[in-house]
Amino acid sequence: MNESPASSEPLHNAASLQSRFDRMGDALKGIRAAEAAADAARRFAEAIIETVREPLLVLSADLRIMSANRAFFETFRVLPGDTIGWYLYEIGDRQWDLPELRRLLGEILPRDSHFEDFLVDHDFVGVGRKTMLLNARRILEPREERATILLAIEDITARRRAEEKLVAAAITDPLTGLFNRRGLFERVRHLVARGRQAGERFHLLFLDLDDLKSINDRLGHEEGDRALTDAAGVLTATFRESDVIARIGGDEFVVAPVGSSQDDGCAAVVRLQTALDLHNRDAGRAFQLSMSAGISVYDPAIDPNVGKLIAQGDAAMYRVKRSRHGA
Image (cartoon, rainbow, N blue to C red; front, side, top):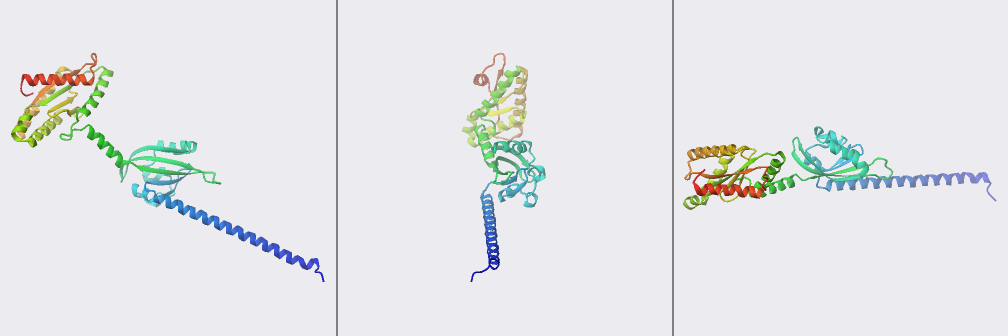
């Protein structure tokens, strides 16, 4: 006997309902799988961020800090509670409120998608001076209208200090701490350029420490080195902090500038002789300091180059040395 249409309708509805439940179950499984994938991706991204040794920030498009790695907290000595959720320019008592950085992140980055090697040299309270290179990249995620920003901070403070030490060592006499010949040439070039532009004269005072060979022969090289460092100390104490003082050879020193007229140059020699006399009286050394002096004048009307200016001063000093002993 055939079933009536009325008796088959409940079976059809039940099958349809089951099919809908199955589709909903499949959709729910898909949502859960997507959430699990997103959670795994988030954990993966956080692991990458934590693995990076340099400080790293994840910012929202309006520069609110979404995430930061351990290196950031350790380097800048801030806590997550004082960082996460705050705007970048608010943290650390607004120490990151740098106009050029805000312009780069707020104006340049949306247009150019990234910037690299933005130099920041800043004194952070409780941390000290930091020299950093900032690199940022804008990332537009799928189905997201607003981008996130990765801000990587390369701390180059130690490297910069090492570079500065190398530069300083290249222009410094290791025994006396004064400029060496290279350092003198660099500084005198600046003085010549300024004198040429302003039409101003200046002097170089050339000095030779008398009888250094005799001190070395009689008392030993340790005492000879002490004579050189004593002479450097007398020069540093005698002349202005703005003056350039250099040791350019074994027993040769130069001071620049010492005045703007011939009288100023001569007065500097007299002042130095007085300082030497006081040193010899009070230092209690087994030797007496004496220096021969020559003066070289830069005249913008003649405009000699640096090499000629130094050669003239050196020659003047040795003329004095040959004609007399002492300053």
